[in-house]
Image (cartoon, rainbow, N blue to C red; front, side):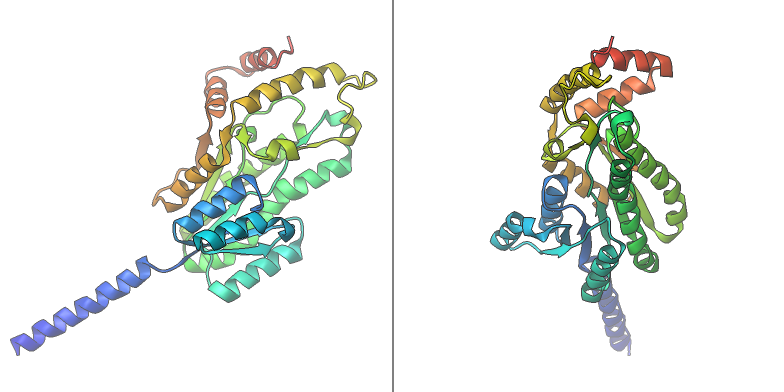
Length: 306
């Protein structure tokens, strides 16, 4: 009788261990927007290399050849999927497809975005709306699409690629900074709503990044002729452009950002904010230790405006 009880206890313990093991090794599903290049590309690769079944989404899947080649060559669990963050139907269709195939979503990385450069006066309302459509509303669309699933799972990580520019503004980027400040504000509030469901909101705040972000930035049409002396901002544009060039020389590789994202999504207690890059750290520390007036004067000097 004692032997029977011992074997029963052993069998029950075995079942518990198996169930726990299966739970711990259950496939995790990640969704990354803007994955054709840069941070999104590197993040998709590093997540897949670390056992996340990764949907590398992008607006134009014609740009997927490189990531598909790497996935095939290295046998990585990556699937390319069309997703345009500017389009409600595209976002919802993509998320529905992922859920029909995988039944869960554990990680969302909101990376799709671009920078619009130019003086506010010379930037059209249509250009401003387009910038907010991608950088802010695009992220919000994706978040809203995954929340019901993550809430039911009572788990999830939502990573938003903000910027140092989500807390500190530099000259000639008023709309870009507007989108990033808005995203950070929304996320700061949202974290309190989602804590009860085990969902973590994470902000990634890089400084200058070695990627095609700089080559893909958009210049407001009315400011395209940077040497146009008819513009009252021509001298400012030329001066600040030189500063941007020096900033890009101190940039960090996109894969370094991807490593931080991996660290954040695999941590039991991730930070809310991750500052990346020596330039970002320097700007943040300087801002923290100065009054508004002192920081403005420091920025003016730093960008050659005094």
